[in-house]
Amino acid sequence: MSRKMLINGERNGSNEEETCYDFDLFVIGAGSGGVRASRTAAGFGAKVGICELPFHPISSEVVGGVGGTCVIRGCVPKKILVYGASFGGELEDAKNYGWGVNEIVDFNWKKLLHNKTQEIIRLNGLYKRLLLNSGVKMLEGEGKIVSPHEVELTQLDGTKLRYSAKHILIATGSRAQRPPITGQELGITSDEALSLDELPKRAVILGGGYISVEFASIWRGMGVTVDLFFRKELPLRGFDDEMRTVVARNLEGRGIKLHPGTSLSELIKTEDGIRVITDHGDELMADVVLFATGRAPNTKRLNLEAVGVALDGRAVKVDEFSCTNIPSIWAIGDVTNRMNLTPVALMEGTCFSKTVFGGQPSKPDYNNIPCAVFCIPPLSVVGLSEQEAIEQAKGDILVFTSTFNPMKNTISGRQEKTIMKLVVDAETDKVLGASMCGPEAPEIMQVSICVLKTFVS
Image 1: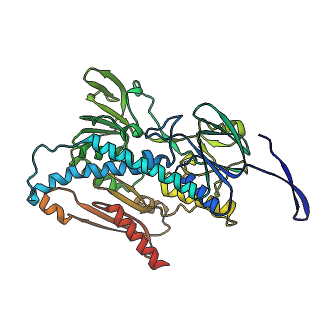
Image 2: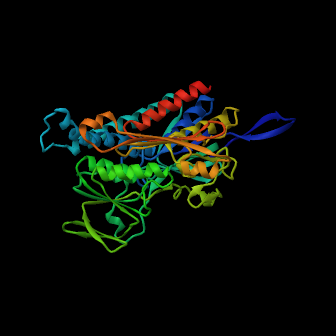
Image 3: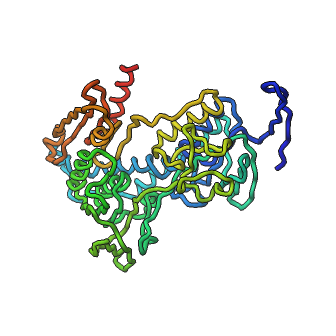
């Protein structure tokens, strides 16, 4: 594709030659961050193009979909399954409230799966319409960078097209990883777990992060026997230790078998399922083995090294404004491996477009970002944990906790207490962190933050 050279006239007292590009901005990846950056950039008057792989619930090198991980194979479908699983416990609790629930309850996994898929198809179409209505040109195919101002797009039929752009934004997110153990091909990642053809009877999960405890809660709520293996003594490393203890106790109370300090060494296919061998030499059988051992930035096929984009491992290195070492190439979201949360990618996308096209240099603010773990019951946190506050605080801190039995549980008989915690600077009374584990914790935390911001502002 040829590029015309135009004389822009005098600028800052001198003649300056400027290239005429196909786009002011070309975005590779139409997940949450890429879509937000595209729409806001277009709102500032930029001519924007964005590319994404064809839609499929399970991602691969050749399929993806507008909406990205969160919408198609992450937060949205996962939360739908969490809602579905929650009814299992609700039906148990209903008995003591006078409801005559039969001992055998028919759960139709395929119906839930169908409804989940229909919803993400709807959202995929919605995101496409958002781009279209914003004036963003949507292109389907795999994009890779071939120069600081050029992207090559490979369409599904193999056709290759090239587009030039003044700025290129990488927003390709991350991909679930498999651990290097013998028989790893017999296991699945969270992508496949959200689209299983059949609900397993026996599930083994490897990992101690939020994905592992969420799927443990989902499957157990649907009647699956679940064994959860993780390396540490408690799941959810990085969260408040007291909250981690509560989550572990709740998981066990729901019937999930925990295996702390234990990993897997081998998977073997048998007629009865998958034989799972631990690093302690123990064995058990499973119908499905889920690897929830982390995600890696999706940079493998972007041609970044050839163009000279600096990487930190597999993550794109960026400055505080999300710019790489090449001034025309930028990156946001999980591909940068900063703080891998959907709202953070949205914030980074907005800051990028303000900086580049809005004349408003903006740095993402990573302080006090709330997050939630949708185990059953859920956990929600914002700010510092007690341990982080002790390490970072310049003075003394105060810790306030409240533990109580939700009124609903007094009749249902369920042994799950709600715990709330505030970490406060002793001198200023400033709240440094807040945590809650219990029913509706994410919603309560979100409303509390909104109320506090209203009063502070």
